[in-house]
Structures are given as C-alpha cells and as structure tokens.
Image (cartoon, rainbow, N blue to C red; front, side, top):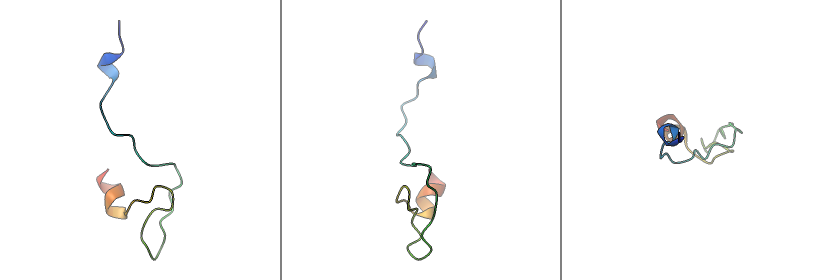
Amino acid sequence: MTDNVWKRNEIDSPCIKICTVHPEARICIGCHRTIDEIAGW
C-alpha cells in the first residue's frame, strides 16, 4: 500500500511561524507577505 492517496501537490507556505505585522508597512516580518496575501492563502 502506498501513501500516494494522502499526498497533495500544493505549494509550501512561506510562513515561518513568526506572525507579526509591521504597523507601517503592513507586511508580516516573518514571511514578508501582505495581509491580503496571508488572508488569501
């Protein structure tokens, strides 16, 4: 039996679990994404 059933072809998230948004730039200092990019992920 293989594990192919459970594998998905998804892009790995750039999140590194340091979720803090810079108040002026409005970009996460961990993954460098905007709020809209994070919400759409």
